[in-house]
Each structure stands twice: as C-alpha cells, then as structure tokens.
Image 1 (tube, rainbow, N blue to C red):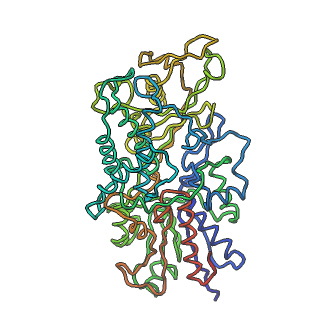
Image 2: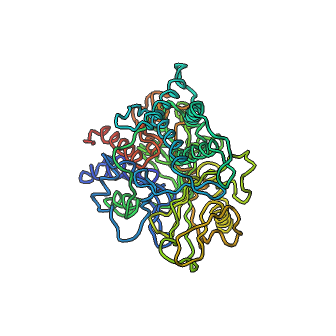
Image 3: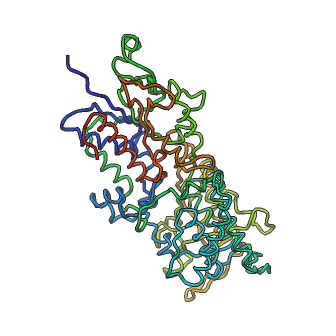
Length: 563
C-alpha cells in the first residue's frame, strides 16, 4: 500500500497564504512531497490586497504602500517583475510624503495656514512619535528650532516614563502630554485670528489633531488612547522611501500565484469550521469518525468537508476575533486559552479609503485653476461654537483630501475607526453632498476672470450648489469593516496587550500550552498573517514573512531545506 502524502491546506489566498503555498510548492514541487491546496472564501485572490481602477487610473482599495524599500521582500519582487513602472496612471501619492509634500493646510472657515502656524505643531508631533517609536537619537545637524522640539519631546518622554512602568500607557496620552508641555513653554496668543474665529493655540492644537488622525490611519487604532505605548517601539520599518507599486499591488500576488498549478487555488470555498485533535489521535475511533489518518477536518459553507494533516490559517485577526465567540464554533474543540486571550487583547481596526472623481469644470480658465490642491484640513474642536454645521461628523477626523497624483481628477481621503464604519453605510449621494459641503468650507474660490490668478476665500458663504466650483461625478469606497471575510483592516497592539501576544498568535497547535503532546499528529493548525508578526504587524511584508515562517516550519518538520 502506497503511503499517503501529507496534505497541507492553506486557508486564505492573500499575501501570507500565497507566500506559504509558493514556498512549499517551489521547494518540494519536483519531489511532490505534499498534497497542497489553497482554499479561499472569496471570488478573487489577494485578500486585503485589491487593485482596481477608477476614473481611468489604477488605484488600491486595500494595501497601498511598500513601507521602506531597503530590504523589503515586496520591493524585491516588484523589481524582479518590473512592476514599479507603468504607462497607465496610478495611485503614486506623489504629494503625500514628507519629502515631496506640496500640501496646503486650510482651516475650517476658509483660510490657508502659514508655515509659521503649521510647522511648530507638526515638528512637535514628529519628535514625539520618534520618541514613542524608540528613535531617540538627537540630530546634530538639526536647526536651533528643531533642537527645541527634540528637547520638548525628551522632557515629555522623561516625565511620561518616570513611574518606571509603561504598562497600560497609550501613545495617545503620551502625545497629549507632549502638547501640554509645549504649551507650558509658550505664551500662545488667545486673540481670535483668521476668518474662522481661531486663536493661535486652537490652530496649533487642530494641526496637532490632524497629525493624530493621520496616525490613526497608519495604525488602524480608532483612538490613539487605545494604542499601547510600550509596544510602539518594537514596530519596525524598512529604511528608504515609501512607494506605491505602479502596476498595482495585485501584481505581487499574481507573481506568487503564477508558479502554482491550475486547480491548486480553490475560490469560493469558505471554511465554516476547523475540527482538530488536540489530544492523542489515531486509531480505530478516528477511523470510525471519518478522520482516517488525517487529524484535521474542514467544513465548508456548501456542506462539503476536507481532511488535512496540516492547516495554515491566514484569515484576518478580525475573523479570528469573531471565530472565538461562544456561538461561532469556528474551532472545534475551541482554541486553548493562551491563544484566545491573545486574539481578544490585540487590536484590529477599520481603515477605509474614499475615492472621488472631479467633474469636468468649464468656468475655469488655465491649467492652474483646474488643479485641486493637496489639501490638509484643520477642524474646530467638538465643543467650539464656530464649527460649521454643514460639515458632517464623519468627515471631521479626516486629515486630507488629495489627488492620487499631481493633476489627477481622482481624489483620495482616508478614514479610520467609527468614521470608516459610517462611510460604509452611506450612499454615494450622501458622500458627495458631505464632501462638497466640507470643501466649500475650506477651499479657495477662483474669481471668474481669465487673466488673473487671484483668489477669494469661500469662508463658508458658498451655496451648496456651488461648492467653490468643485463638483464630484462619482465615488468609490472600500468596505473592509463590513466584509465578513475580513471584518476590519489590520492589527495593532492595544493597551492591555503586548508584543508577546503577537508571538502567541504565531504558535502552532497542538501546543505545550494547555494541551499534551500529540506525537502522532503535530502541527495540525498553523497560523500566519500580519497579526502573527511581532515587529512587522499591519503590513504586507509582515504577512509575507509569516507565510515563509509557517512554510519553513513544515519543511523543517519533514526535514526539507527551508530558507
């Protein structure tokens, strides 16, 4: 009788799952060691990578950035497959990075802030985040003004960490303490300035809040008070610039999948339950229960089943959070407590992208007047009597509205937390109305003269039909929070959690934690995905590394060579 090959089933055809499949297949394909299968609940590959088109431009509905090109495996693949250049316009975000930013910062009420107002709060925020992320090296080339903010950040760090324990402290509380220390060092003019009834102090706080909102989209934490301070310094980025992929992030996924034979990836195969054998298994009892010599039984939404020796679970942390609920039954028997507690403690937030296409305008003359700026928005505080009522609440924590490249007719805005979830529930007409009203409260109103570049401020006095001469024809939004295959966007280390929980996420089962050894069938359930990587969580390259890790775990188990 010919012995059966070990069957490895990978749940999820995103970055982690396809990286694992690629590694297992390319390493052992010639030896035909494994019976390999990837099951994907959706109708496409890519997971939280989803390249699309809008307004004739290539856009990303999900993962967007290569976070540092130095040593990034994603960047290496993109180079190898020549995906970094494209004839079709793409979401290159050439006006959003710090090095090349041409952003214009406007305050609610319709006036542009000078650098003298924007830069102090921006520089303070940057230096505070450097301390939170463990980048406490003083720059000897810094200007006197920069040194001042480095010292303020150092003072905030010293006070914040003076109790000797960083447990249950948040990034948000550290940032706010730094802002208070800054204000203590300054005498801010409380006189109302500008056309929106602002004081200098209120403007600086609003600029600071704008950066906080940007940070919310970076981390997916709906509130930075929920973002653990001590874990922030463990997070790692690759050196070098952050770039997007000209031919789309999906080109990386397609490259990984291209080596796999037809039929290995099965779409529309949503797993509803994973039955596993945490204790000693094998023998006649398991034969009678249909397991045979394979310890894991997968049940699918169509009623079919599949047996496996090893299952690599790459579903999102959001799906795992739903899966450990008492009425879910995703795992049978339930996962051990060390695993469920880590899943529960870690954070998993919602970040959505909103794309809007500008309508063609015929009352503007000259290329300069047809440009939409790289707009950063500064809003009044919630309790301010000067808040403009026509701006909807779900837009008030949005930091920017920017073209996806210079002169593009496609604009992009990012949303996090409750605002991101609200966006998912809105109709296109509601979104266009809300964004148009907001733009009218911020942007300049071009004078209708052919030979002048002069402008007048909207100052909120533009009717809802005019919208400062800016109109939108259509919208496209991501909806990661409500998608049952994801239930959110990416993970973060929440207050009350730690990097140790990310390590626990990566532990395979059966494990010595809570269960005895299953000598005959080890490594029944393995876990991969961005939420299982201690230093690169929330990123595509973290998902990539995790897929390699679990593939290598199996290769080493079967005494194959892994890299």
